[in-house]
Amino acid sequence: MNYISTRDKSEKCSGAEAIVRGLAPDGGLYVPESLPRLSKEDFINLAKEDYPTRAARVLSLLLSDYSFDELLDYTNKAYSRFYGDDPCPLVNIDEGVYVLELWHGPTCAFKDMALTMLPHLLGAARKKVGEKDKTLIMVATSGDTGKAALEGFKDVDGTNIIVFYPSKGVSDMQKLQMKTQTGENVCVCAIEGNFDDTQNAVKNIFADKAINEEIRACGFKLSSANSINWGRLAPQIAYYISSYCDLIESGKIEYGDKVNFCVPSGNFGNILAAYYAMLMGVGVNRLICASNVNHVLTDFFKTGVYDINREFHKTISPSMDILISSNLERLLFEVSGRDDKLTAERMKALKTAGKYSVSEKELAALKALFSVGYADDEETKDTIAFAMEEYGYLMDTHTAVAYDVYCDYADETGDRTPTVVVSTANAYKFPADVYEAVSGTRIDDAFEATQKLNEETGEEIPEPLSGLKERPVRFEEVIDRSEIAKKVVDYCKQAANK
Ligand SMILES: *Cc1c(COP(=O)(O)O)cnc(C)c1O
Figure 1: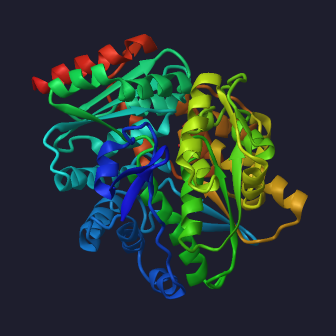
Figure 2: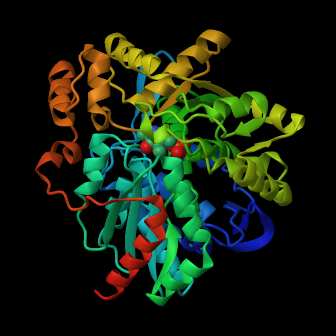
């Protein structure tokens, strides 16, 4: 199967090439030329398999230049790094309400689902396309991607990784996870500013020919581990299909029944994977896109206008503090009837005016599938407290945003369709806010809050977080965003001489 760019459909390549490049040369995002569809029999058979096998089968449909056996080897390796016997358990918390826990991986956030796979997919892709240069993975992170990418790529042959995060835009726990990162091929650096500043600066480096040449001269080629890379999205589609299989297998639904997915969204990658899973055959009633007070997506789905000219807010769900949801470009491409010129124009308008709009017809199509809502920090905390009291279920701040939006949706619509609320992080990644929510007391120190939260709830602290305090800090640098390019080139020179 071939991949095409959202900004120029004539730009075609294989799955392996799409993964090696990350971004199409025209700046667009790669999407499959057509989406494969699973039959009823496929779903029934998949439902009997374990997660690595399900994921390998889904991926082999999407990446035809990889063999099933090869993919199964990767999924087995990736998901054996997860805790417990199911990498993504579906927990039934209330009648018809399920929480899909995507945070049992090495960094306790949903990014692990894809970022434990990407190094395998990318490593194989480099061989398939005959790549000789080493790969420099460059990541802008709002917190969770950076750490998950570092864990995924550390000490992987032929690859180095450099991660930039906004100095004031991530939680203490997230920061410490990155500053203490191990591995010989890793570099971590904080940027003055917020996530959008960081992401824009990194995007500009990808697009800058002169800097790319300097990097090439050191023997490296840039690639991305951000969720714009198809190698990130594809493994995410698998868990939506898998959760649908779990519901079939447990007799909660029959094949063909529709479910809702409610997803805490930022860059729009996670919920977009649900959309693709639907196109591949999962029965979907509504996709519910949940935001925090940076509700640019809520407004877009309500009005058809995407407008980033607004105040940026720091919230207790920092991984969703985003105004530019890069993956929305892929949905725009689909909803415009795969109009590449129009998509390119809109992305240009976003860059120059910070704004674009879709037609009435497109908006109606979006509204027919997507529901939206947002929660502020108070509502988020109230929801954490409510879920703990009512169901004895401890959720993190991002999951609570989604659950709050779902509760509002269910109240307003009366819709009782079985709903999967997607849980994107373990509560101990945000211990101060979660502890405050359940106890009413604020403790700023992350480790103390962790201890208290454990005493209060009895909920187990995952090992990757409990061991953090003892780990030495390796990366403390904070730079201005104007210095990112120099930092990248300097790092390449230094890495080339090793
Ligand atoms: C990245 C992240 C999100 C947002 O996911 P997108 O794919 O960017 O929409 C939500 N919650 C957590 C905990 C995350 O790490």
